[in-house]
Amino acid sequence: AQTVTQSQPEMSVQEAETVTLSCTYDTSESDYYLFWYKQPPSRQMILVIRQEAYKQQNATENRFSVNFQKAAKSFSLKISDSQLGDAAMYFCAYRSGGTGTASKLTFGTGTRLQVTL
Amino acid sequence: DSGVTQTPKHLITATGQRVTLRCSPRSGDLSVYWYQQSLDQGLQFLIQYYNGEERAKGNILERFSAQQFPDLHSELNLSSLELGDSALYFCASSVGVRDEQYFGPGTRLTVT
Image (tube, rainbow over all chains, first blue to last red; front, side):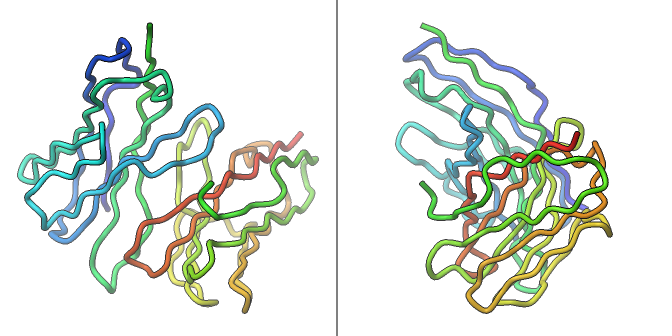
């Protein structure tokens, strides 16, 4: 079974600074997807960024980028120019990629990000 | 707004009771997923439907059941409720089984 580990329960960053959230995963599969979801105080789960395991290039979405290290099974999220609206719980998630496999998301325990002035 | 709707937003009920949570997927999405978010268990996958058929099951209790109807909306039925069933229940949908999942706002269930 796949597992996702987020070892940082809480992180803090000053507005306009950069912060990196860590995520490691364990799998024996070669075809999979990784995601970062954001959960603000409203509790809505918002997809931030996705990475396909077969792509070597790291995904980028505006101020959000990932550092995907497949051999190390590491998938960190970098938030640049942090804004107050970035304050939220961030979840790393894994999904199998094979057509015959379950497409459920397996989540880490989350990292709570605080953004200070 | 993800386009996924869930009703009700909040539900307070007593132990032993039965409730039904409803989810309408985004227009065009065929796959529906149910997840439970609780303080002790975190975010856990419960069950997935694709075009009306059950596709995958996770850590779903026997007291819980779900179905997806011909119009693609889905219902999650929780019966013989216990205090430990108090949680946030999310529905998510995707076009196909390999596409991004978009989450609804969740239903907050409180069992007293």
